[in-house]
Every structure is written in structure tokens, then in C-alpha cells.
Length: 323
Image (cartoon, rainbow, N blue to C red; front, top):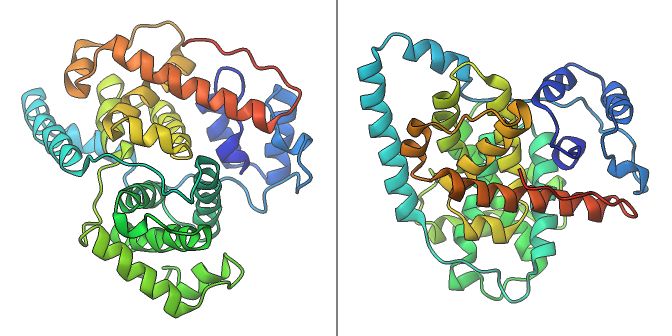
């Protein structure tokens, strides 16, 4: 949970994130302590170190995309960028619907489930994209009346089945695919294989077997490339900020994936570049968001993260500032 829940006052710098990737768990923890990072382990009675070093896994490295785009003229890039981004927005509109939590599920329960799924994602070495897809499958299912009276145990099973469906969709089948037993084991075997398969069928019926959901990652690759095609740090930090947004049901219900993506990209670049104006006309055109609209959503995300840290780090006052 260190990678997921710890940020400093002005967000964790992408440089530190990349340095930590090659460190041991002890070195990661020491770096946070030396740099003044806020550690949840000082107040919580738990292991001071994660069981393995942080790993960042990507299915589509930005460098490969940048190299691929070099083969095209600027005119061709603009042409295909418009086609891609327009397709994303069309699918986003098709998938958009009103959503609310079932009466037996609170926002805190939802937060706990997403945090648990994040740990399972790391334990089973799933892709970050898979985790995003699973969260949006859950969001879609919760708008279905069939899940209106779901209990918390069933809610956990819904999350687990959604993660498995996302894995099949995003990562396919290979020798490294996690088995159903591995998924069930992560919840201490409180469910049987039959329970899991039944919930998986219910989820697939609810989403009408549509598993390729548009998520903030879909847009981030385009937005970050517009700002700087070679900026791996900004892209990675933006993905991690967007990932944190998934823990709050109100955020993912209030804002579209494209809006969370551009706001996360704004926060990432603000953290790295400070007051340098990177919000160009091209970025405004492709995001379909003005700078002021983006700044407003970015401020909501920023305050949510800081408030989360205040709850985790008791007796610590963290000043909230508008980016």
C-alpha cells in the first residue's frame, strides 16, 4: 500500500517514483523517511515494509509509441490522433450513466474493496490497465438493479470477479494468468469456485459481455504525448494520480474518464514543472476541457488525496493548497 497511499505535500515526484522502482523495500521506506514523506506506518500497527519492491508494469510503453509516431508526418499524426480521440469520446459517452452505491454499501466499504483489489493486483502481478478496467466494470455493475441489495461479502466477490474478467480482457490467457483458486485464496477461501463462477456470469450479463471499457489511461497516453511525447515521468505520475481517484466512488461517478485523465495530467505536470504553462491550445482541443475547468477538477482530486492522508496520518495537519 506504500506505492498507493503515500504522497508528500506537493505530490510524490515522478523522479523519486522511478528511483524507488529499483530499490529494496527497506531502501524505499528509508527514502520516504529521509525525504520527509508521510508514512502511514508510523501510526498503523502493520509491517513497515511491503513484501516486495515496487514494480511499474505497462502494456504499452510510451517510448514505443513515440518511436512509432516518428514514422509519420505531423499531418498524419494529427489525422489519426483525431480519429483515436474521437472514438474514445464516443465510447465514453456510450458507457456514461448515472450511478450510486447500493443501500448496503458505503463509500468507505467501496474504498476498502478497491484498496484490497489493488493489493490483489500486485500479488498476482496484474497490469495497471487491468486494475482500471476492473474498477469501471464494478462501477457499471453497481448501476444495475440486480446488485441493489448486494451484501458486503457479495460486494467483495463482485470486485474479485470483475478483476478476473478485466485480466482476461486486457492480458489474455497465458502460462502466467492467475487461476480462479489464486483469486479465491486472496480472500482466505471464504468463497467456493462455484460462487466465483456464478458471480462472474452475473457480472458478464450485467455488462452485456462488453469488457473493453474506456478508462482514464485510454486518454492519458494521448494527453501526455501532446505535452511531451518523451516525458515518461509525467505520464507515469499522471497514471498513479488517476489510479488513486478510483478509491473514491464519488469521483469516478462525478467525472468522466477523460476529465479525470486531463486533471491527473494537470496535477502531474504541476508537480514536476511548477508554474510553467503547459496547457496549450492543442491540449485544450483534444481534451475538450478549458484550463479553468481542468484546474477545478484537479483541485478536487488534490484535496481528496490530502484529506485521505490526514485520515491516515492522525494528528498531522496538512495544509491544502490549490494547484
